[in-house]
Image (cartoon, rainbow, N blue to C red; front, side):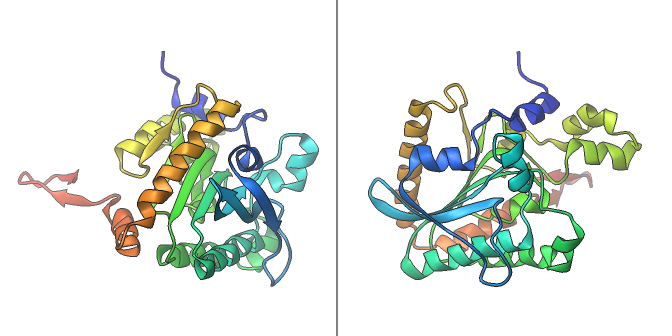
Length: 269
């Protein structure tokens, strides 16, 4: 029996679910974390640095929620501040300079929405990431491993390939937030989740992601081994793409494209 959309949301939020740091530890070697945005501070909600995969250097960036209550408080429950996105962009530009592919792991309910974050330019930080990632001259692979919420997730999601875990979700707003706006009742979150089309199957059908990753062995060594092999294969293919930036641009231009049929009704092409 297939899970309902809101059941997927609950699984994606699970405290025992592997986080970004778990993926880094399970897939890469020689990881060296880099800190700070060189403007304001270091944001613990985003972990990034240089690592090796199959002996080759890559830049890895992950939104980290933490597992325990203490860790989640320190990581702001995986809700990055502007300095987190600026740190991520700094590492991406560094990767471009040295010809390293970029791999992002996304798991956030959304960007941090506090007053301080807004004062420091949260919207601009996200917009700069979207703009710069679109023209980055090295391959980018983004993987949704849990929640993919709003612009906070999209700020690391402008990639050549976007993959999604089977029980991850990807949406412009949380089901609770959507229900509160539409029906003034957050208790209707399950209904909102169904309407938002936020599951991996929905994202694949709409061309938002290229691949859905099976979770049967999630968290086990064999799971990370299989995912590592998939990443290596994908990076090899992207490395030979002579029209990398153009294809990335066209990938996103195709999403949500509509045309008008002879009867005058709009339909997805």
